[in-house]
Amino acid sequence: MEANNYQCEGCGKQAKLRCPSCIKLELPDSYFCSQDCFKKSWVIHKIKHTVDNNNYTGNLRKGKVSAMRTVPEHIEKPDYSETGVPVSEQTARAQREIPVYSQEELDQIRYSCRLTRECLDLAHSMAKPGVTTEEIDIAVHEFCVEHNAYPSPLNYYNFPKSVCTSVNEVICHGIPDSRPLENGDICNVDVSIYYKGYHGDANETFLVGEVDDQTKNLVKTTYEALMTAIDSCKPGQKYREIGNIISNYVEPKGYSVVKSYTGHGVGRLFHCAPSVPHYKGNKTGGVMREGHVFTIEPMINMGTWRDDHWDDGWTSVTQDGKMSAQFEHSMLITETGVEVLTARLPTSPPLEFLN
Image (cartoon, rainbow, N blue to C red; front, side):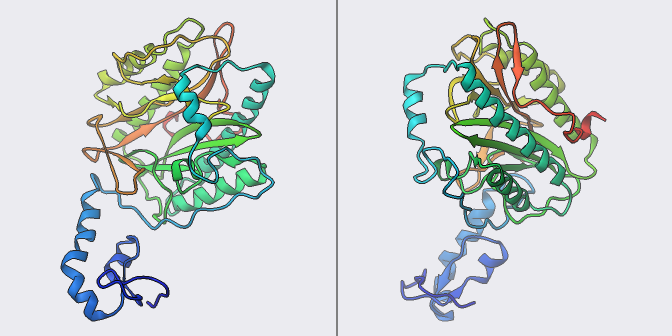
């Protein structure tokens, strides 16, 4: 296939041809000026095909990722929307203070979380065999634009899509692509929405078609662990206790808790204090106080808790290639307990593993 204004990978001249193997494997395009230059470069170039395959720990293979979408000018955007750098968030991390919100701010956060829930339910309704994660991303992006909101993941540290879609052995931060979901998959969709200055954040893992009982039990246990942890939230509870509660729930069932990622504060910023680890014995500081808003989002694996990464710089996968599930809510500590801001609605699609 001809191309213009590209340099040959072999000699640096203007390129006219793409590597057919890269096209077949849906790898980033590599260009060559001629068949002769392609043949001379083959010994070195073919390493790209092998290296890419060596990043996979399980059966999942990445598809083609389309270009980043845009958001209309009239929609209010976070500070990283153009540069990819959340400067205000980095400043807040240095301060390490847990925000306490006014009632007016909490009303705004509630609305952002309500939009997040509605959008997550839309994604749930699409999680069926034959649907690509790219199609889910398009639907999430369009939902945000229609509601004058910004999809929080978009260009956050240069993340290329509007939602994270994590399939099977992907723990988190999966990039939506051209791969169709298959019967027996599980797919986590992580939706975060920024509306008029405030973020909401939630995710769920969906069963795609007929899922085997072993995997279904992993998903069910992960959901139950989250809800058990939420039930313990109230003023005076130590944030470190969340990890003990989750671990004590899932580990006797033979599962492991991912240690590389945590829950976090959410509201004015996409991520801020407090940090909420999900594994037992963690040393995180802080005590829940009225007005704190944060997420709990345990990632539970069928095998080892250790993770690896694909070469896209985002996709985190289980090191042994076994299944991983995750659920997340945003919540508010009230005077007497906790309010789940992204709680499921009467109209939410039922969670299949609870039937």
